[in-house]
Image (tube, rainbow over all chains, first blue to last red; front, side, top):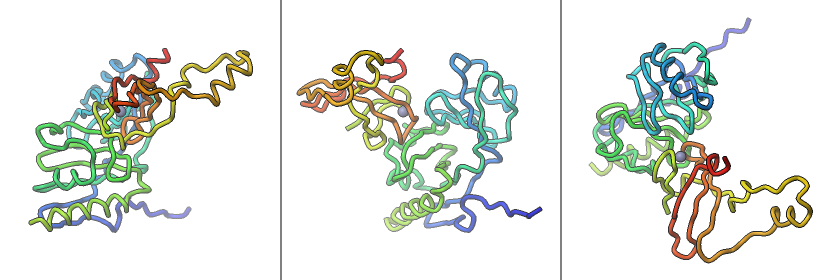
Amino acid sequence: MVELIAKSACDGLLPKTIGSLTLSEAAPEAITSVTPFRGQEAAVSEALKAQIGAAWPAPNRMTGRAGARVVFSGRGQAFVLGPRIAPIAGAALSDQTDAWASVELSGTGAADALARLVPIDLRPGVFRQGHCARTLIFHMPGLVMHTGQDRYGLMVFRSMARTLVHDLESAMEAIAARG
Amino acid sequence: MRITCPICGARDSREFSYRGAALALQRPAPDAGDDAWADYVHLRENPAGDTRELWYHEGGCGAWIVVTRNTVTHEVRSAELAAEVAR
Ligand SMILES: [Zn+2]
């Protein structure tokens, strides 16, 4: 049997600190896509609460806490970022753990750096902690989460990991250059 | 231009991609005849005023949306989930 060595999406690229901002890889234990069948949201919400203590989220919102979140990820779809979950009657599940590059941008000015790349209103009074959005990160479709004070989680398709890091570095450098 | 996705809320137009007139929701019956099918496949209105179009929220939630837009004023008058328009 060949011994394969697992590599994370941003292996060798992160962490990086530029000025007040730090970019680090933040891959969850597992990423599971959950899509309830028509009319099954309430039942699926109960099942998620029983398994990981977090309910089905409204659009643009996430529930739970670091290490066990349910995050709105599209029309009729949410991602469980946390432990692997057991099958749920009334929903289609798919394991996407290795399909995404997940990073965290933190530090004073994190929202200003992201505002250079993301076309939504990121002011903390509008895009609050616990809010998330499927939107663009420069040219890439992605998922943006406001996880804490000056702290954001970002996800793009794994094939775009290097581009994600490059684009975020450019924005971090531009913020640092302004002093 | 901003489009209010029924799921995500108001978003910049760069998040959306354009499909064309919202005709796919009125597909003729298989036996509707050559004229109806030629019209459906090839002929488009070019209104100065309100027009209904299909947009895809590609850089967002992935929903197909019927957008009613005014070609003269550029006003986006409404945006509805295509799945509900078709129902
Ligand atoms: Zn949307």
